[in-house]
Length: 488
Image (cartoon, rainbow, N blue to C red):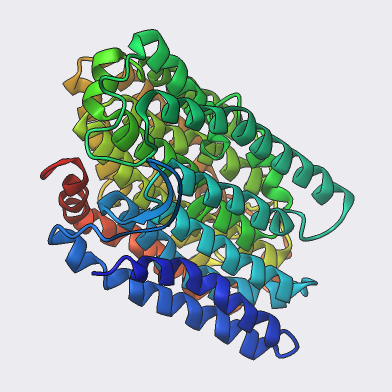
């Protein structure tokens, strides 16, 4: 398979954003172009599964700046997995966004869908990046094109949230991520992602490896490891489809995917384990998981509660990376997929609730399950997946994460994961429990019903995906195993 296919898939959403602009005065055409663009991207990504599973690794360098420093695209299993998550969920998010934006009479809808397309182009660029230079370029593109989405409403609250979003993500990437890339090139002579990593024999030493890994983890602010996390709840001022995009399809997944890919292909699992480069981040990720979960319990704003949930859930992936073992990396990759389906469902539900009832606080949801049974059933399914209960996909990623921790005798991490699961139950199941079992106010039965079908259908599909992933988990694990030199 030619590397030109990779360039075509990266460029496709950005190119079709011009079609969205051209159709801007005709909403049906504009949204049709957006959905069709997503479906074509999905078809192109699905076509890559066979060749990659067969061992092909298409690659293309557009230009080189210095030896070992080019603008390169390369596809391998981890990258394709991330691209497939984005490609599967983007058409659903676009379809949902069309209903949400119209139902809530949002302004600037053409700009919204243009930025949506550019964000997916950036996500595919990150997935297909063949080295750190290419990854960094698309990482920064992601930040810039999602800023107008965060500040979409244009009010004072949105501007403040946007400044925090842009300020933290740019300052961490320029101040920490970019220096980490420069140091890597100086000590390794290349920035290419390579099986087994490129730092072995670099002479960094244990302390140097830990310091470099710290620059990467904190520099990749989109991974939202504490204390570099404040941008995520601040970004909840955006319309709900943007929140879904940020949490499930693009931004935060780009962050944790980058941490995982750097661990596997820059440090290499063996080198990271031997130098203990990642060990301090086992405990930093654990702190983030627990603290974010505790904060989520006390958040009455539904989207803010889900934002802190995301901060904790992302650190499961960072924790899997920091285990520096094959099982840890596999569990992190699997959690990227299961969390994406679970969290996008929760945000779709939050948007449906707001569209139908204009309610955004958990304390306002009592009794609403009887008025919106499809929405709250989907919410319950997604919540159970994120908690890690079978038969939901999230059960497997947590199981393998706990197995990975036990495999290297880090038994304290088992306590962290068990405690976090209990906290997940408290802040997630509180919502459907209120909706189905508590008495609501008098206006619920007569004045509130399900949101429009264009909002409800996508959340039902993604909720079903949470169940389907339970049965597909081992196929995903086997596929990711190719990235690590064999099966899981």
